[in-house]
Image 1 (cartoon, rainbow, N blue to C red):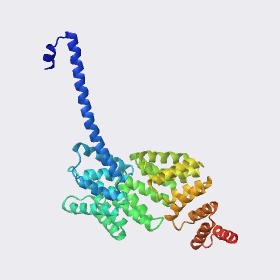
Image 2: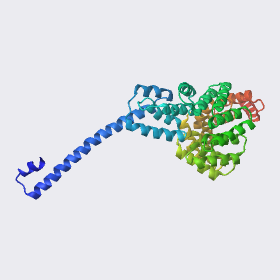
Image 3: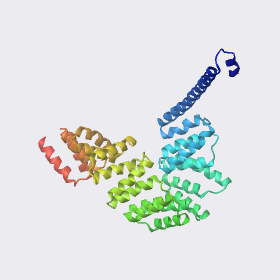
Length: 401
């Protein structure tokens, strides 16, 4: 059609060819612009949904996505699954939950999505939500095939909800039905380790879990935690090495490895491990706090430590130790008023901590508020009536008044 139209125009063949190319180019650009506008609209719409979701408390996310049930393109399902798996494996369970909920309330949902969502709730400390989902899955199991992982996680939620006896009983039932269930052995070991340390029973269960599946990361990780609790840092380090051989992207293992190096007085290796953990999961406030503590203790780098502690409270505003450390650094920099703000926050979340109370009292003294300082020293004496610093300060401040 374009050729016939041009043939009627009084132009040379060369001029007609140029006009044809220009018209084709204009049409192509117009088409690209239209597609770009549509693409941008889809992107902005998705971004708006995600931005809104980020403003919600974790408990409100389910209701948010349930209202949007089915509002997900089939092509997006795999992307959400990939993101959820990444966040789960790197320990960012809150973000994993958000992606899993999108799939859970879509037509593409299946039992595996429910298992993954319940597991993410469990790891995120949302025990009632985890228990509710695992209970439903246990009911389905009775009508379908048996999955020991579901049974073990169901039992673990019972433990975190305060039913230790019921949890132990369920885990032993799980082992009776599936003698090679590594999760059940691991969780039994964890429960035994809470009863007394050291625990030969816990050690036996950890070994059984590893024998059942040498590549089960949680068994190695929890074994390392146990070994650190009994101050066997070299053995904990070796357990984490074995874990990372098979699962090199395990963020929490890198974080805990950093702490084994910290206690083994190897600060450079500790720093590298903690930085690796934060690369894998920037929202790991425990790794961030430990990195700040490492910089403050080993490197005497107050500025670097302060940066990391502030990052912690950006993620966890009420973190008592991070607030305490910021207050300590501020006080050392003669910023007593700034120190008071953070030390008061630390105090609210750790009322019996005499170190926090002492430092806060000093800050009030430095800002010429002796009455507040005196009240704090009296509070310390109620907690520890042999505290020599509080006793001496009470005498001095009382004599001044």
